[in-house]
Image (tube, rainbow, N blue to C red; front, side, top):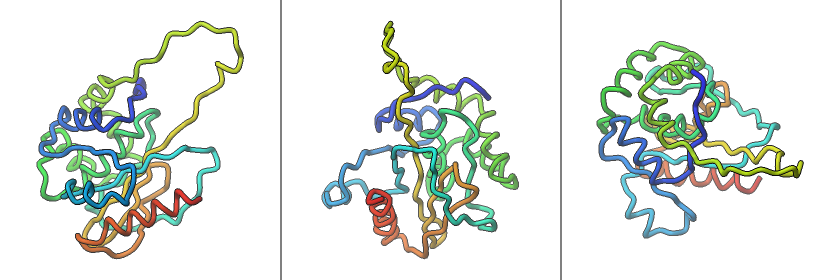
Length: 204
């Protein structure tokens, strides 16, 4: 389950990753502003939002659900460098009307009765998902330097997912113990609820 590479945070890379895993008719688009109404209208249907932010060691402890709908797929992140792929899977494995392909269908049915941590390990055991993920490994520049400052670790970033599921809006963060219920929603207004939650995070 080791040797997952860091991949580029790029919508084109994510779209190709989704396609190679076996999912049809789904693409990833980057949103720079929630104020671009025309862009958002052209992107519909929107299945979920993935929010990327700078991670710190002082991760906020959120109120998570211990008991929730068994059909909601939530997995803890137990694989280093798999954060982006896991955030994407958090959207795909909770879709109802999209053909997600045999690999993800098998993973979903196999893990249906597992706890979040075991689901996280199951993702790591998928050779198909790991191989596709690693095929988009971010190239690392080759540098020789004696400058100690250049050796310090780079900033870490984290991906979390917002999805509507059976009339509820959820935040799915693999570093939390469980899903976070943000409230009731409809197919029409869930995006506004997720947008407001993301704006709160940005303000912090």
